[in-house]
Length: 156
Image 1: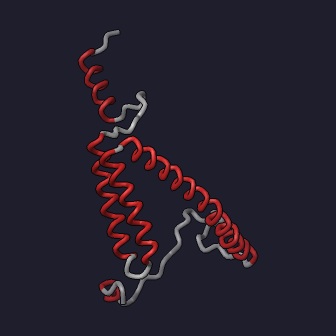
Image 2 (image 1 turned 30 degrees about the vertical axis):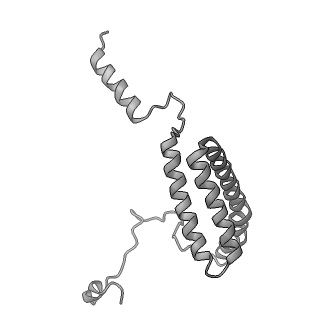
Image 3 (image 1 turned 180 degrees about the horizontal axis):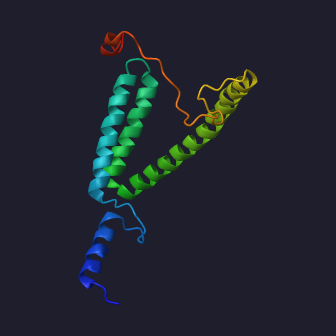
């Protein structure tokens, strides 16, 4: 059995470029990318603080202080900036998980389950999921519209 070494080499190179699944993916955080993120975050926080200062002065001062901390650590202490950023990402992930379980699950149980039970009680199946009948197909005939100009006025 012979293999084409050149073709295997090209496939290997392509596979590593497209999806290096054997290698652990580590985010590359260079000081330059850290500085760029810090500057962007600082500007966004400062603009939020500016809008907040119109009505909530104390909250605007707090956001401005956090923005100052972000820009100082991002420019001069990148390891501290990355650690704080990682902590906030973990905090955000935790908040997302908690909101999912505390809001979406009860909403599903309180809205969709009773709705389905009500449809079962009145024997209504809006999706027509009943078992196929005796016919050759499951096609449901549709009576057409007599006035074809209706199709030209989609939103009226």
